[in-house]
Amino acid sequence: MNVISNWRFTLYPAGVAVPLLNYGDEIDAEPTWPLRKPLDTINLVDSATPFLRPAGNTIYTLSWRLFADLDLDKTARQHVMEGLLYYQNTAKGPLNIEIQGITDRFWQFSQAYLTEHTPQRWMDAGTARIARGYSVTATGLVQIGP
Image (tube, rainbow, N blue to C red; front, side, top):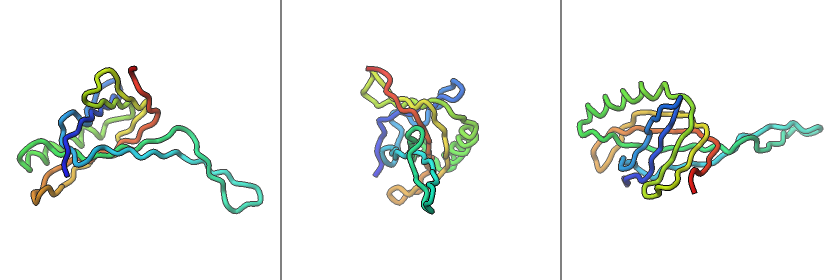
């Protein structure tokens, strides 16, 4: 089921804002962000089984699929491919997350990497549509504002 997003994700590599998802963009589900921590492997004396312990920051992986907003499939495909060329040069940077209707604060990841940006064909009510799939890996989540 398609939903209209109330999120806005903006990546700021090298001080230039790159909107990844804007208010009103059509996505297939709310963005998800599973949490995981990197692990250190500690070899214990007299044990064949290593000990694993959490290390460093919590890592978030954000994923979502954004439908191309252009009507013609051919044009949408071109739009997606141009986006691939643009986003492949995106380096790490802070990622701002705003939620529509909350105007006095937003959330920010101090470091974020655009780890995937791919064109996809998606069947919607029997019609093939073009979508862009995004994955972002990020750390250092803080709330900005009251």
